[in-house]
Length: 223
Image (cartoon, rainbow, N blue to C red; front, top):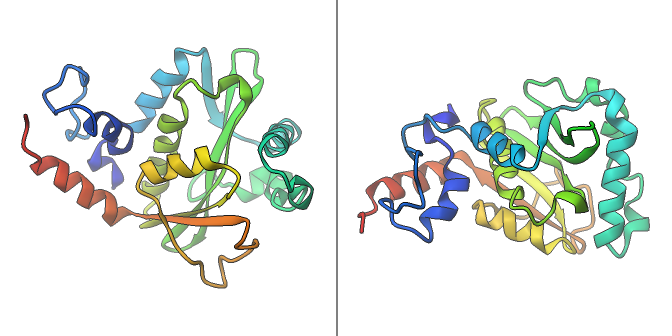
């Protein structure tokens, strides 16, 4: 299972800037497996009085509104996108079984949806990362990294070895976040190709990449 790597993504941000003995890493045993990405994202969200849960079909309208607002804010050719990718939101309960495919929402204490993210099983060995959106209200609060880490952890815990995603070229902050989590650009095959390549970037992440990173960090000399 993926959990034997603890939660290396979020912690790797600290590792890049601090030695393993640094006080920047209190109370966390990086490689013990005792620190899950869930506990980290729950702690990060709780400081902002936010929680997360599985999405259900009753969330469709509010979630679609959030996604449309983010797209309109960042993507110049939004009219091209409108209504193209969100058929799954019409049938959340049927599309996301909460096992091999999952969709989550982040909400405030009043139940307002402020963020989302999930994954969908596309083959025996792969899932597509989907619906990674934050409203203006919670951007800039250093929540994106822990949230992505949690989605990656949950996806790999379903037993797949590969996560792939499609990202619009006018979303550079998301692109940078994916790169920091070791996602690599690739050219998709026909089964995954669904949008114009001049507007989108395809990224993928393999379980073995993370095991290699984990192994290198274990053998890294402490300063």
